[in-house]
Every structure is written in C-alpha cells, then in structure tokens.
Image (cartoon, rainbow, N blue to C red; front, side, top):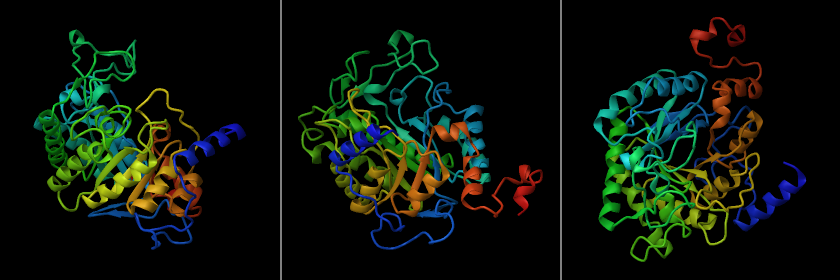
Length: 401
C-alpha cells in the first residue's frame, strides 16, 4: 500500500474499533496461554478443534466454482480439492453450498438440499482426506442475492428471470440489493423456521458426505448477514429492530446445527465483521455476536467483511481484515480465522505467531498456486524436507533432506 492507502486504512480501522495487535501466540480464543513454540514456523503447527486436528494453520476459503448442474458435485470439484490437498493445505472448505435450491447464488452453484447430493460429495471428501487435508463445507443461503448469472455468463451477476430458470429471491425485508432483479419476498416467521431446518438437514447430509468441519455462511450480504445488518433488515417483529432480534436467526441456526452435529465435529461461522459504512453492522456487534456464538458451541469465527452495501468504503490492502479477527479473538474468547489478501509465507506466519488469529484462510492465492503451503514450508523451514506427496517426492531430491 502507498502512504495514502495506509492512512485511509488506519482511519477506517480505528473507526471500526480495531485495537492494536497482541504479541503472544495463544490457544484458540485464549487470552493467556501460548500454543505456538517460540522457534520454528507457527504456520505449520497443528490446530486442534474438538476432535479434528489440522496439520497446519492454512485453510482454503470457500470459493464458488459455478460448475454444478442441479447442485451436484462433479469431477471438477474433485480436481479443485484434490490439487490443494496434495499441495499441503490443512483445511479445505467447499464453496457456499445451497441448503435449498433457492438458496444458491446462481443456478450453477453447489447444493446439499437432497440426499442424492451426498455420494458425489463423498468423492470429494475421500480424496482430500486421503492426502492429509480435512474436508469442510460452507452451508449457505444466498437470500436477496440469489438467482444470479455466474461470472462466466455474458451478463455476469445479472438477475436470472424465472423464464430463464431463475427464482424469486427472499430476505428479511422486501428490499433489493442494488437496483436489478425482483423485489425479494419478505420471509414469514414460518418460512424462517423452515430455512433454519434446512440448515440442520444440510449439516446432517454433510456428515454423511464425509465432511469433518461445517461452516455457516453469515457474511457478504447473503441471507444470514442480511438479518444481522440494519442496512438490509427492516423488520418490525422478533427478527428485526434491536440487536437481540437481529442476531436471533444466527444464534438459533448455530444452536440447532450444533445439536445436530457429532460432538467431535467443529462448527465455524463466517461473519462479515463490519459493513464498513455508517448505520451498518459493526465490529462491536461482531464481538458481542461471537461471544454468544461461543456459548452455543461455535468453535471458530471466520472473519470477513462487507457485502451489505455497494457504497461501503473498504480499505482493501494486504491483510486488511486481520485486525477484525484479532479483536474478536481477544475480546470474545473464541478462535478466529483471518482472511483477505494474505499471500506471502512470512505474512501468514506472523499472523499466527503474534496471536492475531488461529487460522489463515486463503482464496485466490491458492487458485494461483495450489502448492503454496509447500512453497511456504521451504521459505519458513529451510533445511527441512517439505511433506510432498510420495507420488511426486520420489522425483524431487529436496524432499529427502
């Protein structure tokens, strides 16, 4: 970032209530105990969440592949996950996966709303597990942002009409995001309860499909986030208005899904930790929501931001969302994941070593380089052989020490 960008970031971060970094590596969500050794690479220390141990602190963020037909996984999804499992990623989180057909962002998004989806997803999880990665899934409902054309379409992100195979979007209020598409249907209380039950059913199918981590998507202006943000939620009933009402869908869904999961399966929640605009959801809100999520059995907050308003002033730059994860970790007493333009091994390692987050989530950088974790190993642990898959290791002398 240039000097002007840095000044903008500092002003915005302070306005959002971001505090200074802690300097001691800690247990997930702890304020006192160290979990990372003082020497060596913090990024390559295991992370235990309930009954699951990740081989390192590197996770693949959920990234839509827009490659499904009727929600089914296929060979592309196997290849996408397999490459990064072989590349050394610790946790692979499958893309936003619709808990209902109408919960997809596009007609080409992945789904888990019926039992028939399970066998194809199991092919994905079996390969990832075989090569040491932990397979996770992000359960999602797109809400007011549903029924869009995928990026590969000649009119990307445009509304897909019912005549083209689209559907009516839904939300907490009859309020559009932007000016395109139909005015969303305002959900009734009975419909909200039905969608919550769809998340629970999807969580059970996720376990049947072999996923060992489940994440709930409450970020980026999709249905879960739209209940949280005053910019999107104009309800006057028990799901709108006050903070307690706006977090009701979040807490009830997390509580119900936690009860449906085996005790040893970690539950994550992705939050947009701030809307980056006046009158929206704030970092203070996220800290309090995270405290409550910890009380209902959530294990880690995946800390993203934005998505509720196109006018948001987001200070994009390397690691620009790390401070959000840091403050929630410290003040809410829960493990966090940091995401957002984390691209360099030393940068990622420092985030974990300084106790700013327990996990580093990467998106586009893992698309560019599926073997990024192995490159990071070489940079951070020189002189020690990286854990390259044996199918490749025989040909690479650097793996033999």
